[in-house]
Length: 186
Image (tube, rainbow, N blue to C red; front, side, top):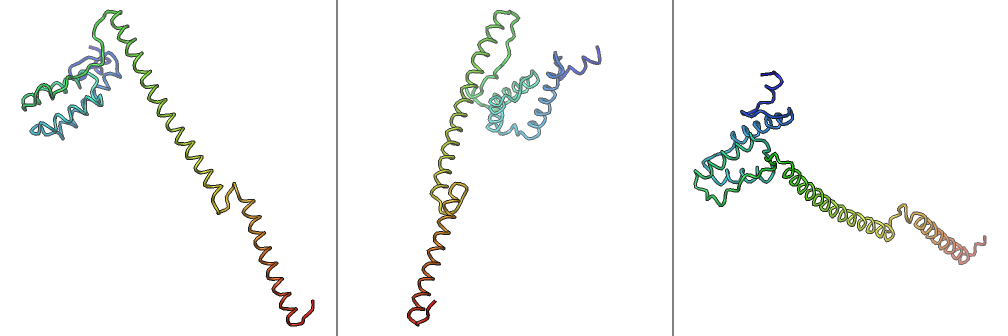
């Protein structure tokens, strides 16, 4: 056996690529972590972890699938009804017939990108609509605001100077009126 091939063996399986072998090693670490924290005496917790692992596609290699089978066996021993134990989904085709593989690949390729694109498109449109609404609200607030800002600073400053000029004019008029009443001429 080559030293090269030794790196491809994980959990009793020989993988075709180093990347797959590394994925299996990572799954072994995940399994060890779950085993360390999982209490098999509480079947509801085991079922919850099992379902989460399936939903999140935590295990993808035969190493992980074997562990999921072990969990299925533990759940069955604990009395969980078979109907509540979901089957382990396989995301790989195992036939060597090119027509079956190509049809499976085509159906997966046809479904996945369209659904993914549609979801991203809808999310993008929703986010864009919210951003446009936020921009409109900000513009309206800036026009309606009494505080000078980049939109209305010229008008605000002109109004302030006009107000000062009016106050100054009123004071001058009051001073002139007082001078007249006291008989002081300018």
